[in-house]
Image (cartoon, rainbow, N blue to C red; front, side):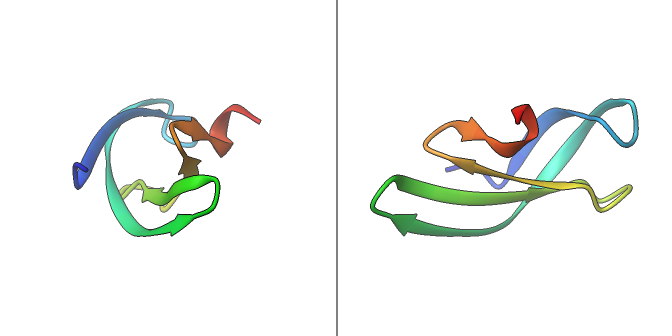
Length: 54
């Protein structure tokens, strides 16, 4: 999986390049933590579903 992800940061209000902070495999699938280097906003994505949409 990629180490970088272009994503709309809700804190910065623009598209930023997020960096993969951590990952692990769960029974639900792969859990990946992503962080914005500009504002430290982060979210978790499990099997392609991310917590930023909650």
